[in-house]
Image (cartoon, rainbow, N blue to C red; front, side, top):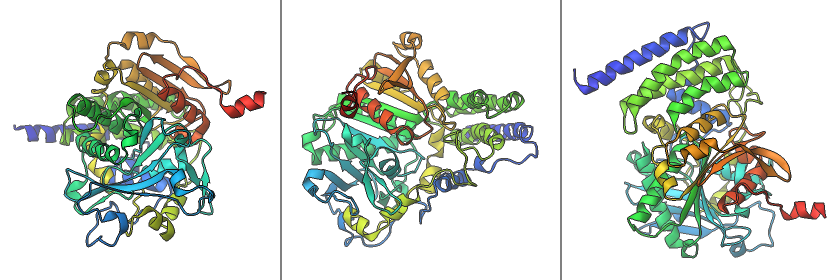
Length: 509
C-alpha cells in the first residue's frame, strides 16, 4: 500500500470513528452544522453581521484609473489620510500622521497588500506595533474600528476618537492579510496563501518596503500583536523577521517582542482542553464531558500525523478535532462562543455591520485611494485555503525566539470558549525552553489597573501569560483600558508594574 493510500485509509478510519462517537454524543444524531468548513466560514461572517459581496478580492480588468491601486513598478504607494466624518477639523493632515497604502507583493503573480499606518498620538519615538486579525481571512479593520484603533464607527457612520486606542502608546500598523482579505487583492487566485511560510514571507517583504518608505521609524522598537488565528501568523512572522535579521537580509527590523491574544497556537493541547473548560464553566454536564472526551484520542492522533508540514492529514485532523468543539456547542445552544456570558440571536453574535457600511461609502473610498476595489470583511476563500495550516503546531519556533531574548506575551479573556484561557495557559506552561521550570513555578500575581485587579499575570524572563478578567475573545473591545495599559507596560518592559495615568492622578489630587 503506498503512502497516499495509507493517508486516505487513515482519513476514513478517523472520520468514521469520530462520526460514531459523535452519534453517541448528540441525542438525535444530528451533526452540528458548523462541522463543515464552507458552512463554518459562512457562520463566522454571519455571526458578525457581515455581508461581503465576494468570497475573496480577486480582480480582473484595468485598474489604471483606480488611484493607489495603479502601482506600476513601485513596490509601495502611500497617501496621507484624513477620514471624512472625523470630528477634528482643526488638526491638519500632516499633524494627524494617518496613512493608507498598497504594497506590491514581491513574490506573487499580481498581489497588492493594503495597510493603514497611524503615527502615535503620544510620540514618534514610541514603538512600531503591527496588528494582525485572525479568521483566518478576516480584515484587520475589525480591530481598527471595534477594538484598539484610533477611532470607533458610530451608528450614524461618523468616527469618534477612541480614548483607549493603541496609537496612544505606539505607531500602529494594520494590514489586510492574507491576500484576498479586506482591500488587499490579486489578479490571480494562485496568490491566495495556504500556509505560514507564504503568509510570513509576504508580511516580511511588506515590512521591508514599509521601513523603506518610513526610514524615521527604523530604529524604533518593533512588536507584533494580534488575536485568534493570528496565534499562527504571529510566531511565524516573528521567526521570519528574526531569521532575516540574523542573515542580514535587507533592513534590520528592531524586533523586541510579540503578543498573542486569545490565539490558536498549539492545537493538540488547546483542542483537548475544550471539554475541561466547558465543564469548569458549567457549559456541559459531567456525563456530557465524559462522552465528548471520547473524541479527544482520535483528534490527538490526527494532529500528531499532521505534524508541521502535512497536507491531507492536516485537513483530516481539522474535521476530526472540530467534532469536539461542535459537540460542546450542540449542548450550549445559543451561547456566544466568543463570550459565554452572552447569547447569540440566531446566527448573530455581534453586529459589526457599520464597518462595512462606512468603508463602502464613496467619500471614504476616495479618501483611502482604493478606487473600485471591493472591501471583503472576511474571506471564505482564504478561510478554506488555510485549512491545511489550521492544525499545525505554531509553537515550535517560539523557544528559539525566547532563548534569543525576544519577549512573548500571551493574554486571554477569561470568558472566551473558542480560544479559551485554559488551553492557552496549558500550551504556554508545557512549552520546552530553558526557563520552563522557573516559569511554571512562578506565582500568579494581580495585574492592577487603577488599583483594581484586571487580571492575573505570570511571568519569568521573556515570557508572560495574562488572564484578563471580565473579557471574552476580543480583549481590547471588552476591556479597552486594561488592554492599553497592558500594551504600554509590556512594550516598556514593565508589565508587572502598575502605572498611574494623568487622569487618575488628577482625580486623586
